Image 1: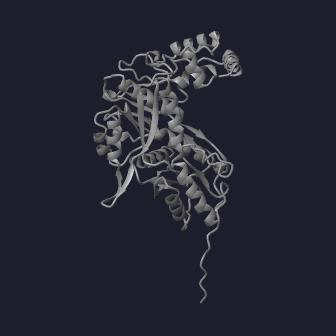
Image 2: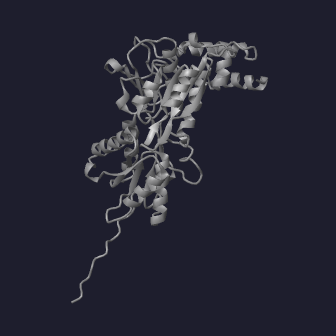
Image 3: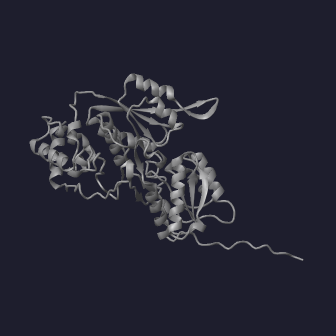
Length: 400
């Protein structure tokens, strides 16, 4: 690492504000030790005794305006980090209750964590994996991403439990499950009681193992609030099919519409997380006499399908149809699409999931814990206009 980089980190640190570890709003939820994170809270109480909240490596770095890599080297007392910066980083780690006892030497290697995913085509996964790897690096661990979706003649989709058993035989420290894998019971059985944490998964798994989830009721509520504030009342949702998470997001959309007194206007068009099905569902919504003025989607990929359907049907976005996604992936922020989306705070999700897994690997014994991370809304061009003006319907004239 160059002196310029270290100097820059030190200079940035002088002006960086600190984070109050007591500013989080969290509450337990029975035996599952549920924590609800609100807004931009930095830490969540995940300790066994509901004690002080535990910060992640990213929390320490962000509190000082430096990178996670610089913070990690400072915590390891590397010689190329200036003494004043090392001192401030250690102070921040103590203030945020970062688990220094788990910190490993840079040259040590304590194992590998397997990240189990359904597909490698979801850009949201890359955001999560980056955050997971940053947090695991602090404990000398690394992560490998393993697709578990296998097609067999007997079933349309099945989990590749053979691959998971092979990982157990290779001695991985534990498993992180991204979203809901197919045939989860078989997956858990194949892990042979290795530490297991679900990330971005459905609420149905709360209590079975440690879970770090997106608070989808908050996320869908933010979308509906945003669209209603623009004057939209005829709002539809594409989703609810393909996984429990999709169904939960559709239910959250329905609840948000009910909260605004728009239950009778809410329409859910079945769709999964793929662009092809999103386009088909969008085409169905844009046919007929009752076309919504706004559409929310289960994820950003689905939103791209709805945008394609709108283009094919001759609807201009956003003046004639508002479209919103979910996940705030690179697809939503590209110069071509610019889709309003819900940011699930992937950095926080990945860091917390990695921390929970390290706790279990280190021998932490406790009831299954659950953390729901509150997302935020990123408004873009695709919802920059209110509802389109009503057009007069054609009337049939009878000539005698």
